[in-house]
Length: 587
Image 1: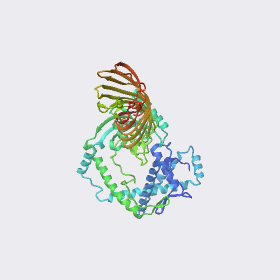
Image 2: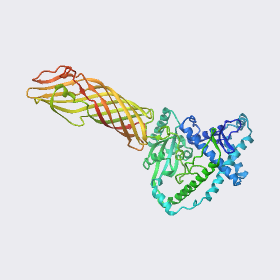
Image 3: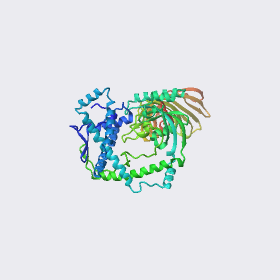
Image 4: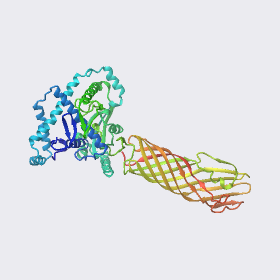
């Protein structure tokens, strides 16, 4: 039946395939899909699209929906065993509200009736299905609340326990009063669409910073239903009440300031009115309430797990082996909250964590905001020190009495602009300038040879990122291009000769290596790269030009070694580098 997703109505168990069986109750495939639609609707609004069944987001949502159904059925069965009764008045009120909500999804009453006929069910059938759903839910909640009161030690928390919790969680009670404008980004949105939404948010932020009224813009643009009608006002909240990524971004904005915070469900423009820390006396009652709920939830979890051990449960046709619930259970049958409640309203991202579109998600479903968004640009500047694999020009002169060369033998500077093909792969253009430290060579008769060499090269580069945590990446990189000698010369001085020779050459060269990237700020706008690579770069043959000559012969061009082979200037060897990288288009 074409009913609004927000209503999440039950569907008749006709010939629909059974998805979940819990003792004598069952959830059909149709019911499961509608519950999943309602789940994603609650996260991302009416325009949310279901991710493919093979995706991590779909599987995580399915597990949550199925676990809730299993728990609700088992608790309702326990209520029947304890002969807990629910009055028809309680259920009828819920049924009437649900039917009216469904009707609002249709243009007219006639359209609603047509929808029922299309599904081949009557209004009485629909009301009965809704009645059964709410009866089960009310039974489950009633028996949970009764069990809560029976748990030993579930009603006592000492002052010492409250104080210890406060001292152990100092950051949890940092407070912030703020307002928001939310621009949603649908799950798995195309990078181009996500970038367009971010660009729109940036434009609105600039107008607000220019003096536009925040409340007016919140009502006009914000997609957060809980705060938009209030001009974006959320109220005062503790850090622990906010989803961690959202909290990190909000607390990075100074008091009386505005900024952008990107989270899985979209982009927030945040205006911070006040930041501070609550005193112990003001939060002690809420900590006590939280610890009581935590203690009760732990006991309820053990009890619900004991019900699962006795039940027959089948999912997708496979009988399930009991596995203990990883989370405590609350009186409403949901996961226990890790923070006391406070504030006028809570933005959507504060209560739920959905799949990421701005950050990268690996195969384990872990988010890494350290990675760039696909389609974005980054610029980098840096330097390096390097060594070579040969003795450079010394071989031209045969035997020598000694050489004098400093370490690290050479250095370089570079500039680079990269394009993120996707969050893990960047390609770009790199410009490098390399300079060898001067080398001095003495031959057996005391003649001194001093030379310098520098190069300039445009190259193409590629960088593959592997996230280690939310602020650190390991990377593999490679670059290659055409290199030019821009300042190679040799000065010869001795008792019988004084000579200056300019050398020129060009050749292809490249490098490949590894490194670690460390984010430098909370918004992941900048990073420092440390690493090492091996460079292969040789210039041969070397063409010479004599600028000054007193005594001695003029060297031929190209310059040969004593054995007749072409002379070679070698920049090959190990590089150690450090770069500073700036990601463009972020907060």
